[in-house]
Length: 547
Ligand code: AHR
Image (cartoon, rainbow, N blue to C red; front, side, top):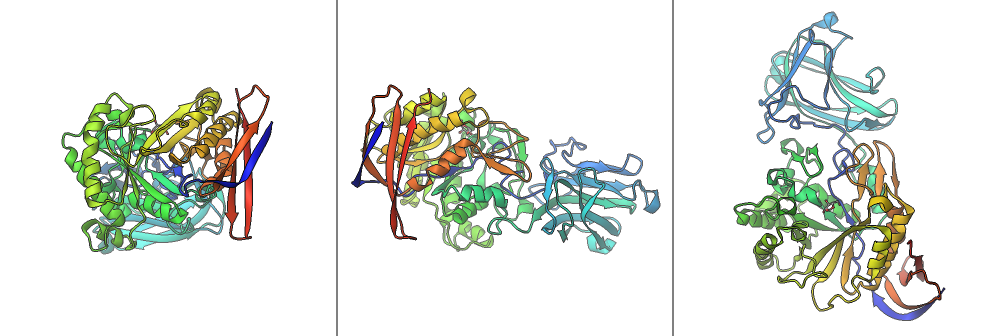
């Protein structure tokens, strides 16, 4: 085959063409990108009133030396559950020196020699305390870092914040945090956090995973889901107001779409911050008063409209405005660069399409009234049905086999150029072809992306899904980045995206492919000016069909 490239002329691909989509799925954030090491830090993951289920916290000691339960005595109004620890032994009578609790994090904490970890917890006690705070091996036998916190009864008779820095003397990727004592008495513990001091741009994100996404040079970040946005039940939906402000005060919620608890340390503010740190435009997908696929509908949609407007105010409002001031109090007085919002996720793909279409204008009209510059995204796919409502962009989601996705390179060839733009906000080769990541999947995706480049006059934005998977919670396969507590790698689909990073903003050149082959081949050529070395580089991509 021969590719004739016309190096003069062409058409510019949008600057914001390639981005990423982060969803709280597969422990992507809790136990992943968010560097908090403690799992269930506020004991709220306990299903209400099952007092002894404090998973993954465990006891150090036996029934004759320590009794642990939970009650609703916390000082934090929105997360009332606290751990009650009654120590029955004293001094030498305590088994193995001291008794207490430990937290193994999300399948082991990654502790590195020489690194410093900030430990915070809240404490109330009826007596004076002497608590050993340590990071240890998974069996508790090797101490990696340790300190003793001592306080008089008067100091801790009311809830008190305890804080210490621990420097690790050894490396262990499967460590745990221990809180132990050998003093008889009753104490309450709540909101326990252990986080490395060294995080991406000092904003709480795990360095290695952040570097991997930064290397994709994403021009936008779509967040926080996916099905995570709606929740299977509306009461488990992501509601942004519960995820901002001091971390201790956030209630956390059960991510019933993907079946795990999240403390919401990675909340709306942090997503906006991450976008800024990556140089990516935030794209906020907000809950539109429906749970996943519209299974449950809010009786009062106007509350959700109000919530969406207030969320926009939080992101871009003046620091003196009601919600802008909450952002400013989080040390970000400058507005974030929020330009896009999406009205829900996939409800228009569902049986509840009509209910979505009924609600949508309520959001659209109010957003345009108060924030005319914000671009609104509908999830009704106009490439299938002509839209009956106004929108700036519409979502297109596709998960299919490799040869089908390859052939979808032509899907937008005849899409109307006068209507709204397309946002390919979730795509992947999945099923048998995708496995847990495969070259075949990447090849199918490559063909699709070449087609999107060629249709980038109507396709404005593209991102793969899902972005992350923790090897201990593979709810969805394949994914772009696979990780455990201390290691990460990119699947072929990750490296394919990497290969396309130069596309955003490049010049798409006119090409003619001359071939006698019966195998479908897709090709494109882009030219990109590199101001660093004052040179123009040309990238030609040629992919044969994988079928
Ligand atoms: O990316 C995984 C899931 O696929 C998303 O949560 C949902 O939007 C889609 O169905």
